[in-house]
Length: 460
Image (cartoon, rainbow, N blue to C red):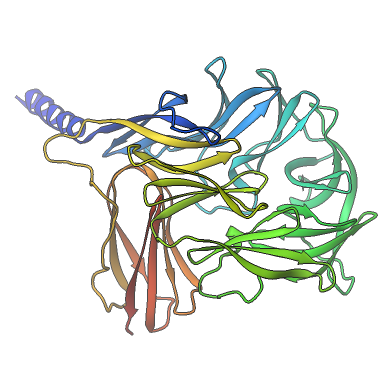
């Protein structure tokens, strides 16, 4: 009798889980920006997301790469099952449709500088370097062969910042001290990375400072833009030294709307989104600053998603059911086409002459009234006013990246509640404002083409 009861319980929960499990399948649709109409059969990769009460498995392409005229995709896969939570990174060969695993690791719940998923790549000797920051040592790919670099003398290259004056600049982890340093490096003899000289970073007064670069953008001669995390600096490179001249900010910025993470530099131009507008500024060598703030595009609707090409020359966005591509350098729209018939999820990718959309083809397993929401929605927090906790609910109609952040009245970010990919469903987040003073705040949700802001009040 007891065994039968246990069997019934197992059967009940198995049926319940089966009823609640959903799977979403789709493909990566490649859109030729030189042609119309869109060829719906031009697809590169098939994906499947699975959502269960115990967790989800979802996939996305975050970068397209050419190695010797062969197209590859960088694929991310995440398993959110609390008993088997892992992240995977794959390299997918579009010609042979074969997949090679690059990384298998556990989620980092406290993300650090230089912990990232989309690889930094650099071509060399008929192959491609892949840098993954703190996730793993660099690898070199030629054909379908993967070569792994090894550390020498306790020095492990982990990140490629860029190239300045014909020299590659890499971040090196010194394992004996666990410190980060900058080195010039030779990447032309794979699979080895030859470290040349250690670079000293100085502030404007000549004092050596502990600093590394996450990206560098060459300007003229030895001058370049030095990016560290979300900050931009003007710097000069001489010998084995980098000297920081000053901090760079946009011209007349609106402090409630611009975001350092959205800054991109191409051909001495600073390109960024401020509010729902795309701006460009040209570097002026007389003032050593970006000047001539000019409006490139008015993104009139708040329901949009956008992406930059890897060289930052092209800006693609979806607005009012249309895919639009804008040339930031030529400062003109070069493509517009309706995608109203395409059901898609974030992210949108662009590498001229193609744009790539994660197209949804089928959703199965929606039973017993457990339906996936039909639209994005951000609900008003409850209770409101509150002290110190409140609940914020939102819903997603499909797997997508979602960001939920809290800002003060000056537009300064005070809390990040969600910043990750999530499967379709309904969500409820608890926000604890015990560290905030009384006052009015705003919380904003962004997911794919959806963006919405609501007000909350902390009352102590």
